[in-house]
Length: 87
Image 1: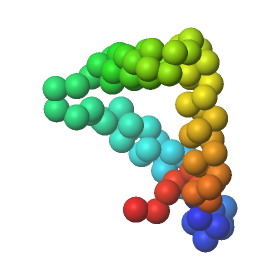
Image 2: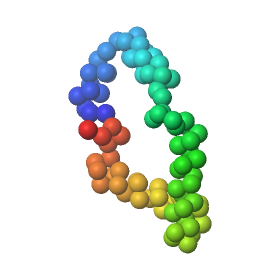
Image 3: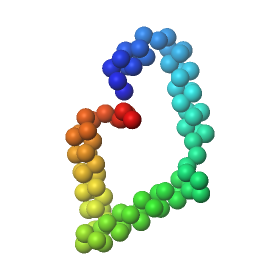
Image 4: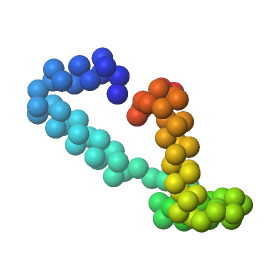
């Protein structure tokens, strides 16, 4: 979150912060995955991708997960370690 945005949020009354959190929760509940996909479908696809990568690299699935997380962690830091990337 950008510093300016954090500062603005910190000045708002508590009730307003709670209202905004409620809005975010409602938005998250209304989120729908891409057409024809479910959350379970995406999880299964991710698992399939991990297994495929592990087989290609000749390593165990757990090791491939560890390597993948290390790579994503490095990428995250190299891109400025911002949770919300600017689009």
